[in-house]
Length: 157
Image (cartoon, rainbow, N blue to C red; front, side, top):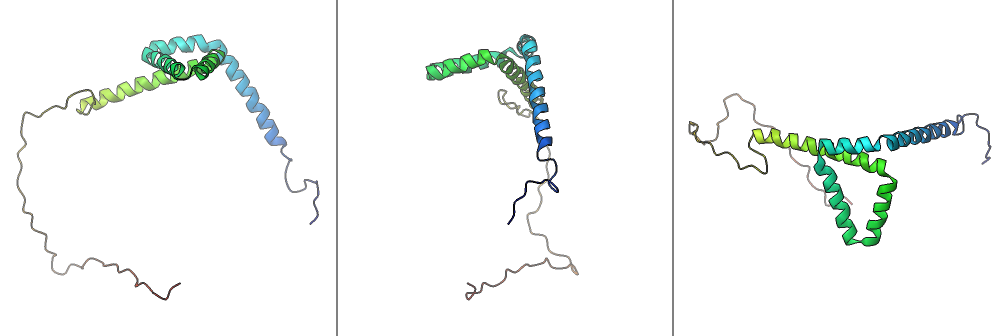
C-alpha cells in the first residue's frame, strides 16, 4: 500500500476545523470578557429574583469547607477567580427556584402540593353499581387471534 500526502479527494486537510476552533475561542473570550463586566449585575439580579439560591450556594460552600478544608479553600479561591461563572450559576439557580415555586403553586391548585394537606371532599358522588360478569361474545363475531410460539427444537445448536 502506498501512502501519499496529496489531498486530491480529502478536502481541505482540516483548515476548516482550525478556523472554527479559532472562532470558538474568540467567541468564548469575548463572552467571558462580557461576563466579567456584567458579573455584579448578574449577581444582584440573582439576589433579587430569589435570594434563597444565593444563600443555599453559600451554605453548600460552607459545608464543603467544613468537610474538606484544603479542597474547600481551593474551591473558594476558584470561585473568587471565576466569579462571573459563579454569578451566572447563581442566576440560573435562582431562576430554577422560581420556576419550581411556580410549579408547586400550580400543583397546589390540584391538591398535590407536598407541603399542603390534601383536601378532603365534603360531598359524595352518586354512583351506580355495575355487574361484574364477563361479556359474552356476539354471534358472528370473529374470535380473537391467537399467536402461538414456535416449538423449540432440541436439535437446534
